[in-house]
Length: 229
Image (cartoon, rainbow, N blue to C red):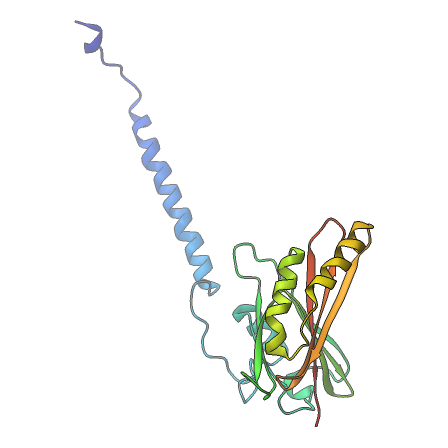
């Protein structure tokens, strides 16, 4: 008998190990899938009910409404009929209601905020933001504030604002002067901040504040104020 004819024997149960491991993996996937589906992940949200949204289908900031916003990531606010009553939107008469930021890992953490103003152009805008704060005073909505998702390199932040200028009704930005100020200020190790706006082309006042740290990127924040009359 040659060396190639030798057959090694091994315990019979070793052959079951790969199959058993596969069964465990499949069972784990099945359990995980069931849990996620029970939580509604991967399924389209049902049409919102009144309470989750207002009777006119704008966002509500009641407990039900905030839960729906957290799951849908969509916020819709109508500022075209200012002054805007806070209680009608589920907001307190006085205070600041903040949505986000969230961190759900692989799940979308952005909020998609549609603001209607009834003005020129599209009559409103859609912002992709990490967080939204709504301020109310005396029973009325007085302002919205929302930072853009993530930090941006200075040139990208500048390009974003230049793209927004015509839509929002801002004056043309002197990018060369802003760039020089940014280089001088951050080069000296200081924080650099610049504002643009407000513009009222969309039927509400919107401005942007950009804050840049030395040796770091910039954060852009939009501020919106309802216009009356």
